[in-house]
Image (cartoon, rainbow, N blue to C red; front, side):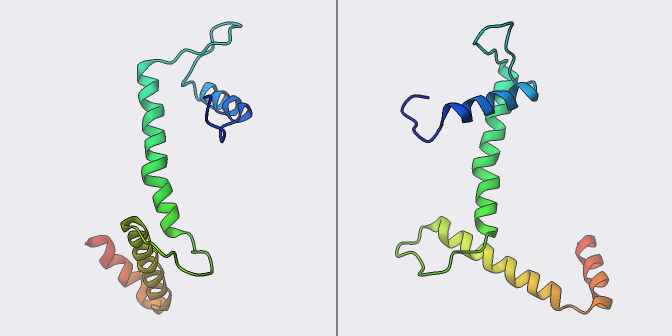
Length: 113
C-alpha cells in the first residue's frame, strides 16, 4: 500500500485481524503471509463494493447538511442526494402529522400495496 498516505500500518493490522476473525483469510503457521481463496476474495470485493456504492451514498443522502452556503457547483449526484433528503424529510413529517388512530390504516394500505 505504498503511496497511500491515508492508510496506516495500524489500519492494515486492524483490517487483517477483522478478516482473520471472519475467516476470510488464513495465516499459515508463524509466517507473515496470508492466504485468500477465490471465493473469499469475491466476498471481500462484494462487501467493499456494497459499502462504497450503496451504503455510503445512502448515508450521505440521509445525513443532515452542514450549515452554511450551498456549494457553487452541484453535480448530478449532489442534486439527487438533496432530492432524497428533502423527500425523506417531507415523508417523515407527513407520517408524524397523521393522527394515531389513522396511522394503522395508512400502514395497512402501504403493506397491501
